[in-house]
Image 1 (cartoon, rainbow, N blue to C red):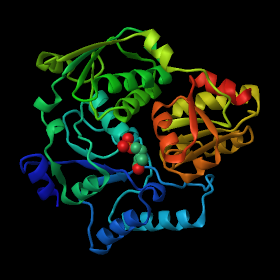
Image 2 (cartoon, helix red, strand yellow):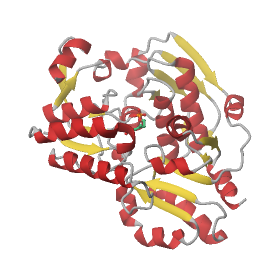
Image 3 (spheres, rainbow, N blue to C red):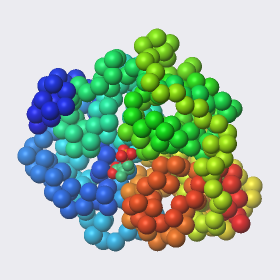
Image 4 (cartoon, rainbow, N blue to C red):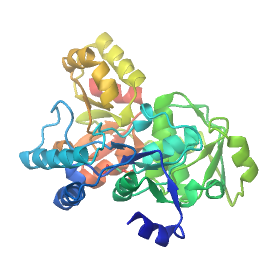
Length: 365
Ligand SMILES: C/C(=C\C(=O)O)CCOP(=O)(O)O
């Protein structure tokens, strides 16, 4: 099947890949037909031939997100099928946290934030492979050699100037979304962007690929080999992003039912910052949900228990985008542009953007 797809999309050429990361493994998003597809592959004896990880599921590791029995059963069938094919069911949208991909190595990843992160901040090479293709590629060990697996296909096509100062997570997300919306396709070459921290890089990568089809940007000074990319550049578009653009994107904040941090999964530093804040201030008035990766979650078990007494609910292996649990809320406040895009579409819940500090203020308001 991978060869047939390659005939259609890459002139029959394929590229061997070191790792794969599959998405579309939540029962909420793929439903019965998705489960049957995975069970069919598993029952045919298919096995992955390379390290293969999986995106978040509909339920979290410790059962914090209560969902109905049908979803629990469907999710467990998905886990069984994935496990029998040899997929690491380490449900995370931030596999780059523990798979330290090297520059100019090939990968078949399906989750857009993760692809954009490794393409942009590591110059590791992955195109956006649809979830089923990433899985078939993991079994075959290769995927179609589409443009982003070639240097020519990674040639910057749009010059973007961002002179705003250090970008926190929300600002970085807005910059990613604005570039995505204004350019839409191609490869942006970004000058002047300074990311305040790891969380900001994650939010930028997630937003760029949520608000456009792009999964690669060259960030001057940050992307490995950026000088070579600048030499190759063939700019057809030129845009500027200003502080005013960001301000106009962040509308008035309405009082939420809950605050949500962790789309993509929050890194350890972010979790520890929030823990320190609530330890100093006491229990929040509105719940704060934080999704983080299983690796981080397992290291902070004691803190997870402690802050649950402060109304802070840290969970892992699932997120509020792909879990039906989200439907119980009316309004969610978040610093994630990706959550802001998907939650209203998938769950019909309103989402308002806020900077991390403002989100926490809202939790105490
Ligand atoms: C629905 C989503 C993920 C999943 O089904 O695993 C979120 C959207 O993912 P993209 O990779 O940004 O399309």
